[in-house]
Length: 168
Picture (cartoon, rainbow, N blue to C red):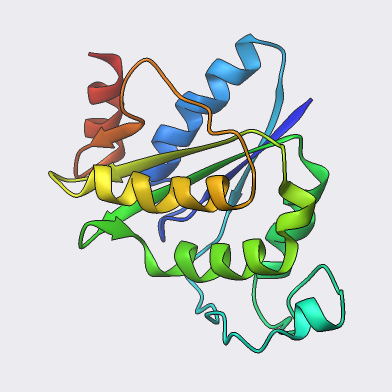
C-alpha cells in the first residue's frame, strides 16, 4: 500500500512538511509506503471551468503547464491521499486549492473510494476552516475521510515550533 502526501506549502521543508513528516512516520510504523510530493512555489493555473477534461474524457487537465497533472498521475497510482496546506486567511493556500480543484474535477473518478486525510499548519487560527475546505474534496469525490484522535493541525511559525507542538 502506498499513500501520497502532498505538501501544498511554498516552503519545501516548512511547517506543513513537518506535519506531513509526522503523518508519514506513523504510516511507516504500520508498514505503509509513502511519498511526500512538494508542489513548490511556482505559479499554478486555477481551473477555468472549461469542461474539456470531462468532454474529452481525458482523466487529466487540458492545461499541462504546471504540476497539476503530475499530482493527478501520482494520486491515481496511490492507494490513499493526504493533503497538507498552510493556512492563509482561514483557508488552504491558493496553490494547493488551484491544483486540487483541477485534480478533483478532472480525475475524481480515479480517486473514489481511496482514503483521504488533510493536515494544516497555521500560526494561530483558521485551521478548522481550512481543514473543512480540504476535507470537502474527499467527500465530494466519494473518498472516506480518515480521522485522527484530535484535529489534524499544527501551530507555529517555524518547523521546530510545529514539531514541538506535535510532540506535546
